[in-house]
Image (cartoon, rainbow, N blue to C red; front, top):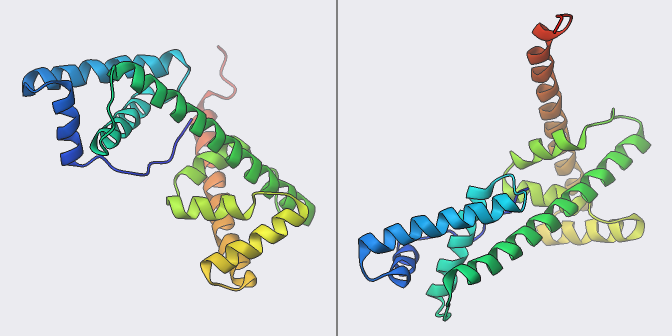
Length: 200
């Protein structure tokens, strides 16, 4: 489960968060550690694969809202609300990714130029790309039939390039991803080979 990172926590925002926890710097640092630990457990209990990362994202958002002047109390309950929203966003993003990559697989199968690509491996390779490249691929393959055609035209207009240039750009990324998946599969075969044929 993943979520995109947007706003980054700066020193000023972090200091504001610490001051909210306590005016005493040492006490504030200890409270911050306890809050992060509780949030990590919060995400673990909900089956999150990256609980510490999500705990940090939650604290980042908390700091941002404090900086914006929001009155927050009690802090942990407020953080749980942020955490639930982050999980929902991550779930929606995963659905978006799966839908777009399934559309990709469908188009590739129809054209007859690509073997079946494991969705899980494809998503891992996609996550290695820069955020803007991920968004380009997902936007390109998001939708069905006429909606997909219209969306690609709109995407090309937004980027200020002809639709053919957009197709070429996405095709280069597609090849890059397919190569990544192939390399991942080769690495897995190498890892498994020493164990093949051996008796348990």
